[in-house]
Image (tube, rainbow, N blue to C red):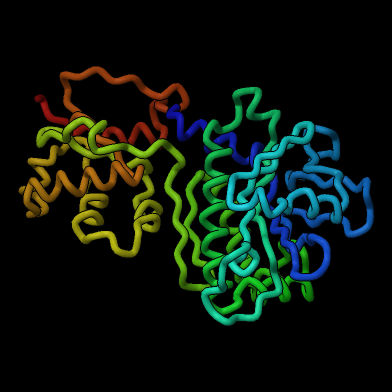
Length: 342
């Protein structure tokens, strides 16, 4: 099983929740949103489940912190804002990136004269530290959470300074529901953004959401960026393999400005056909194909490989069902007809 596949399979039990906390211009820190389970308003000993329907034992609960304390310790002091926040309490790890609005930063001026009701805020992800320590949890989950918190936070701050979006959304949440109930998320863009981010990170470590309906936030898998100088040159006799067999899913992750060549290569890539073969088949110059392949590799949507042939030896995944009569068996029978002798 690939490293990415291993991480995705264990992310569900490792990533527990997402919360939105903020500090108003006047008053104490507040919790505006929490998914997947709401936090009790008054009970200080009310434990929350992890959404899996399990018991409220130590291994399955999110935490038993009262709302006021939870919001207070996740809203960082002014000096600690604009940096990664990583707090561990017992078996839980809280990861966020608290941000100040420009009007709250000393010696700074607001970009526009918009009425703000928020001083600072933080998008916080809660992960199960026990899973990470057991080496069963996804190794890149903390990185994915901190990146998502930062990038989404920056987008929220931009929209707040542009049109007061965040103040409006928080007011909507406070007059409605604190949780993920459909009555709230159906008309509150902020709750929808946070919910979709949580679910997509937990299932694939990849997310793509639109803040305020137009500002795109897209995060590829959280691996170290591939520097052009560190990448092996792509050869004409090689080919590109998409990282997922669901091409429509990968196409949805492409930036809006992705070229048609990149999209075509993603759809037409075949492990039995080299870039030279594709050049003839889809009528795109070889140099352009190689550049498009490099782009997909940098976006972590594809990987360069040798073409499959009958003279090479391959190892079958131990989890693959290759019994005679299985769907994978019949699929490979169709596929094997295209394998060349070379």
